[in-house]
Length: 463
Image (cartoon, rainbow, N blue to C red; front, side, top):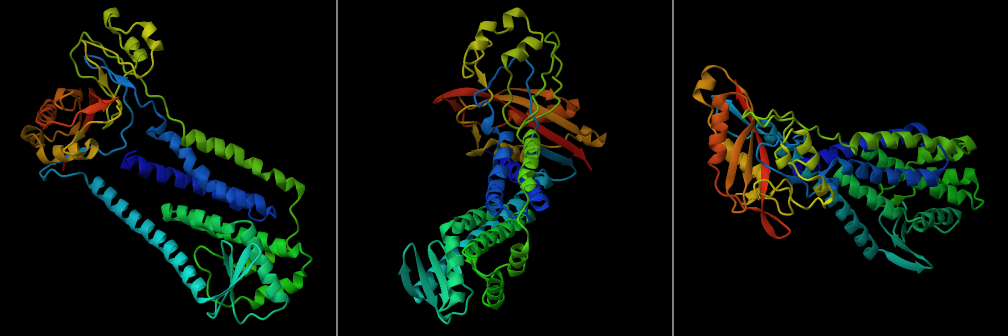
């Protein structure tokens, strides 16, 4: 998975999360089916992360084969920016690429801060437990602390202020927190906090966190009221506990979201018809799957081998490109050059051979350039060595050139050719700089060096 794949995954999963949470807000948040709402909110995060995975190379055929020598390529949409060379300025990476890395740095800083907040919260709870007076009971513990803080629970421990006197109020509070412990709400909080660190930029993730915290409290309140507790007395208790320090990040606090909890206690139980509302989610999930998890099949491009003209490529990539046996048939090859139909039954890892050459599109260990990822390091090399042709700059000629080449078993760049032409002068300069490339580290498949084919886009821009 490349950096671009990661960015696309985070973006698409963020959209899924927003849509799924909007469904909760519109149809479920006012219902009293609290256990289902809890399940739905937790599942929303998981589903939002699973759906976009179908749009990544994780589910593509990793051993697809490519052949070279007059055969057109099946090309996929580029997701890594190409090199942009501007006339009259120094050759550097495109402005977009600089903004991309700046965005990554900002994102990582935000994620790191939230993870640090979780760790500090847990450390603070541990320190409170060490300073407090611990009483172990059956299935849970109570820690009495001198610091003025609202009652809360963390895993199997309940934290109370030591000034809280014995009586019905204390009993209700302990019953409330025991329900949090019994229903494992701390695990929910840690789960959501982890994903909040990943999607911190998405406001819907923060809304989801708040909705889940409310749902936890509704569940605990409902459990206490089911123990024949007076509704009026319990609501009065909530109002008396409104003061105190705010709850810690990963805890369930007795005095959180009091207004919403009192409103929900007074709400009538949801009708039987409301049980069917979750069915509305099914078409939404199907639509999201079709949008984010299904790819359009690349279209083949027909090439006349009797001509030596450049191949017109509709889309381009900066990773290796390839062709399957069906594409060979449609490209108008002579019978002597096509693969026998019986070969179509052979496993995808078998190589198509033309002129005794086996050329791959994707291999176990992709070729590397200058000790780094080809998509980054080779673009850097091109940006530093490419010069805008003087005649093209003088005549205001600009365009996009795509160069196809092969990294052979020795790491040499060979068979460079233009597969999308812009202008003879631009094409010539693109071929020159690509062929001047130092040796690469060859790709390996099943432990053996193999030849791998690449297509590389270059933008020439006149200011």
